[in-house]
Length: 315
Image 1 (cartoon, rainbow, N blue to C red):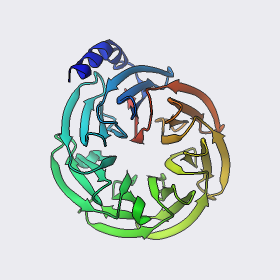
Image 2 (tube, rainbow, N blue to C red):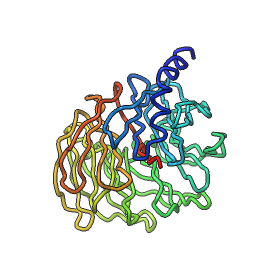
Image 3 (spheres, rainbow, N blue to C red):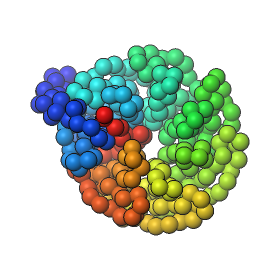
């Protein structure tokens, strides 16, 4: 505990200084160094690091001055004040927490349990447990539909997704996808894109109707998915690239070289820049979503994963 206090005291001036600056900030979980890197995406610099014990991986931001982390090593979920780095709430879970998604409208936080085929439902204000949802084996990534109607988990060892209705938290569908799905994301039109790390492709579905729409080949070990400028961007861990897919035709558009072992991916609020966390390079790459080229890099702590939604705007 003393180590955490010292790190926060050292970073407090930087965090306070950035809290009055408008713009997008990234909160990147660094699994190896057990920190979150706070990145000012307008200035393109790292402004602070916050100690997060337990090898953090999953992350979520609420756009209202908070971020959440999931530490698989210690099984702890934490809620932070994004302005000063203080831990506001923390709770320990008993399985294998990894993925996270925030339902801000209903004050619910969903955390996937890798070991016990379930999703925890937590109150996002207090982190109190409200219930659990059953999934297939080894649920990893979680995503909430743009209309707030659906929650989906990527059930890696079952080669499927589980689709839940957010109104009543009832299971709506279990749908087969490619081999070993891990990360996933909703396009703006509600279609779901699932990265299958075992079959090197992306499954495209209509999750509300329970229909498979297409399978699109990408690079080796696709992990995360984000959307900008009418395109899907998919991180390929083993290829050190991002695959770009046209959302209208589902045709490949480009392959962009990034850092080593890219994983987490998100976009800025203006949907102009794609942010990619490179686990082995200890950087994030910044991609112009229109020109489809890397325009810069920002250094992070050791082992950035940023598994989830990690970019938020400060007004």
